[in-house]
Amino acid sequence: MQRSSRGADPGMMRAWPVLDTLPSRGWLWALALGLLSATGFRPLALWPVALIAIGAFALMAARSSGWRQAGWLGWLFGVAHFTLGNSWIATAFTYQAEMPAVLGWVAVPLLALYLAVYPALAAMAARALTRSGPSFAFALVFAAAWIGAEWLRSWVFTGYAWNPFAMIALGPFERPGLAAVAPFTGTYALSGIMIAIGAALALALAERRWRVAGLVAVLLTVGMYLPAGEARQGTLAVTIVQPDLTQDLLASPLNYESNYRRLAALSARRAGQDGPRIVLWPESGMADYLREGYPQRYYDQTTALASPLFARRRLGATVGEGSVLLTGAVDLDIGADETGYARALAARNAVTALSSRGDILGGYYKAHLVPYGEYLPMRGLLEPLGLSRLVAGTLDFLPGPGPRTLDLGPYGRAGVQICYEIVFSGEVTADGARPDYIFNPSNDGWFGAFGPPQHLAQARMRAIEEGLPVLRATTTGISAVIDPRGVVRRHLGKNVQDRIDALVPPARPPTLFARLGNWLALVWAVALLGAGLLSRRVAMRRSGG
Image 1: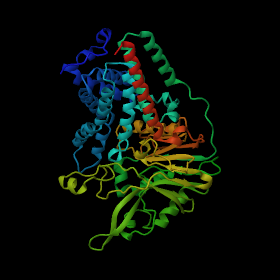
Image 2: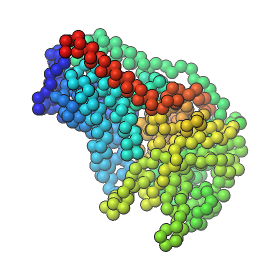
Image 3: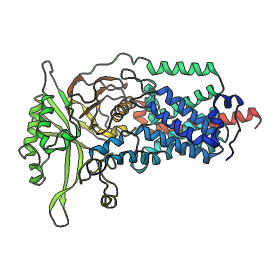
């Protein structure tokens, strides 16, 4: 395969020998750069490495012999990028006794084989549209194509939106970093902007424009560590409970009562906590069924005297007068099987709001379910082969209708996003019913070492995009109060049994992204594409092409 030298600079070849080794070692460079680009995600957060890596890959793709080779290199880049970025998934297999733990280390690269299609599409499209060597025009077109590819990844086959490249733009807990522009771009467009910057920086380094590269590096660093400014104070009190309940404690009925007692001990109103208060419990922590209408044998499996009414009243008394509890729960869909026997046909991953008297004030059903976690696709085919859901059990969950706002009166308007749902940009609030805050209960106990900090980072990005505070309650960490600027005001680290007492940060006015959603990201994609093609045409005219 012959490489194209159109648009190449001899100085660039000396500065970037990778570009001159595409025929023999391009596959290895693509894998290495894909791996390095994923180090920008939490908990490593090596954003300069990630930026240079994806910039260098953009030059490789531009230098390729054509769109087919660019797509091949993009696919290899994506395989390494997503294997490292999703390595936490392998840990989930250690919590399912019916499947061997080693299968996790096969599942992660297998998932990456599919996800790598999207970087491949971006590289192919950019190379086909520019048909020239490394240039600023290619950087812009590649950025536009990446935006479109990430947007597709967020919804094709129900979507897998974990770790868009924009996540490297988040600053440390007390600073939003370059993600501060997300209200005007959205996450997917910010990914494209970061890639354009990375490609432009790599191009400047390749052409030995040291002053330009130095100026870009300084501006990036200043942007990443710029102070967030003074925080606004809210008035609604919140208690976020993190019980540090590990997966083995959650799964065993022998622990249901002790689990409740641990949650209860962390939930009581403390001296000086006057006025309305919301108490937030995580996903999976509370085992009792809270709604009537199930066969009695299901209530007998719980510990609340086999009565949903008693369970609700006990929970209401636990948080006390003047408090509202929002807790993760499971609801059942009851029906008759083929023999007419009444049983649970499916389950719902729910959040239920309870008053201090035990009245149900509202509820929400999770809409974005985790494939192979909360339901088993193609169950009839896969279950006989010995493949089960990562979460133990044979009962699949059903999805809810989508975002919903619970109007809790003096306790505010609560938007709810359960666990994984918070990663879907533009899909976290109900149309026409903007909440005052987003409650994100989660069970991150099976997410390994990399999963919880990455999950928290994506919750921060939703706060910035929407201009809304996000309140996270998790079983084992990381629980947090995140203000609308993406600043983590309070948090509890992993494997800590404690609570957060704080005031809910006030929401900002609706951002541009909150009004337009991912249409805004697509507008950015069109703008970058147009700018790139225009830049290419101007360059061709100047060169007499």
